[in-house]
Length: 119
Image (cartoon, rainbow, N blue to C red; front, top):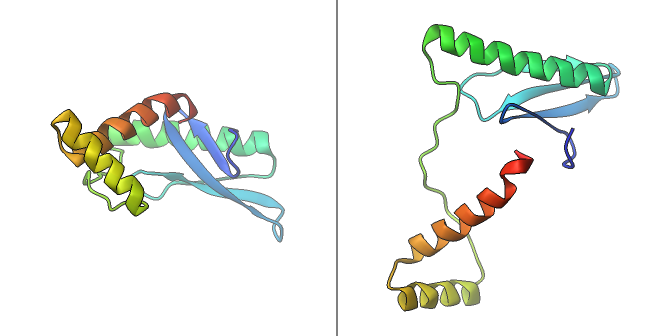
């Protein structure tokens, strides 16, 4: 398990899980994929093993069927930022002779590269 609460990681995939106090177990699903794949366990070790097995089985099934396992993303999303930050970034873009979009992509890429070890 990672530092984040209710998150498991394996081979570049993330599993989100919840604790079910009524049934005394943990259940979850693989995030960011085209299908719904669930896993469960009564202990953290059992949950991690079930998650890893679910990821591996899902990838093998996708490969056998010739399907892409990952959910497609459009590459577009809206971000709300403070107006003073928007102004600063727009000025940075002008100064660099580039677009605001390029400045944001560069900053997000830098952050993503720093965080890759956490995914």
